[in-house]
Image 1 (cartoon, one colour):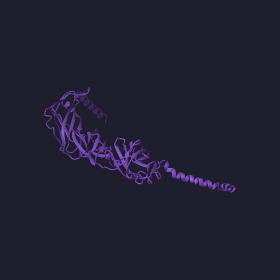
Image 2: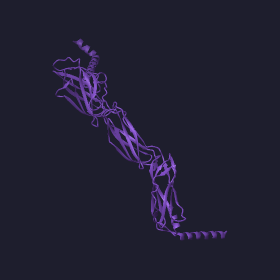
Image 3: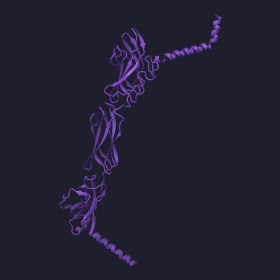
Image 4: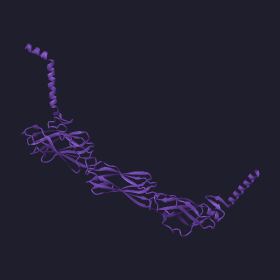
Length: 439
């Protein structure tokens, strides 16, 4: 047993001595004694693929890195990439031999077309050395083919759009592939709408991730906006589209001016109108102005009344002076702007046909008539009880809204005073009766 162990030890020692005599490590290289040893020290140190994942029938580049670890140059030739599913377009590019110096790496580039369906493939890279008796260098290259496409969708938009009103939308680009896509560019196309920005550059979208591209759309009519999504997979151009129908409708978030508690008084041939205006909408109104429209004609001192900013659920009083020969149609126009500067207007017509006053000061009642919208934007005014609000809103203010003037309390105040007097008289009835008997 001891003799066997001794023999094995001697053999291992001899092998180690022969290996050291054949090659030794010097710096970043291995000292090779013979050309055959040097050829054995050439190897495939890595590879790069562009695109990282091919589409079927797509062309890309495979770069193989070959490194020489020997301390002497080695000449190689006839590099090739072999697989029945990949056609090498660049065959014949390496017609001459290539010398690889000590510790040097040489890249072999192959332009290939994937003639394959979805799946993972392993083409064989091979290169020969100019050393008699040396084996060729082989290495498998992993290439994936996937037809899964990049997806684009509208991830955020309003339920409806309004003419000349700017709204925001988001375009989502999702990359479900295992490789990155680059130079992602989104270009909107629309006939009948203004879209900002005119294009959106997203750059690289990593594998398995997504991006959101914000756009602002101002429609001039009902139309479609097509977003063209362009991107590169390697050096291959691809495009996918997503279409956004622009549906014109009522803006559910717009400011809604409601006029109530209107009081009209006359003096000579002119009239004075006072009242309250409430913003019953969701968003604030800016630069609000109240005027009368024909056949009524504004006169001094209040031909128009500037309210300014009116927040949602807030109200303000106004006062107008006007002249009119037809009290059956007194249109009151409310104009305002939104936060983006878009202009809106709402016109409501007062019917004062029952007015029959003469010269001198007097107060009369009237009722609201039809309403219309105008201005550069779509008026989003929804009548909540018309001019008078719930309950009819008489010009005297009776039955008006929560923002009614003092006139709205005349009747309840009078009734309250009568009740108090009646209670006092009932309590003091005996004392009053006694006083009357003494008299």
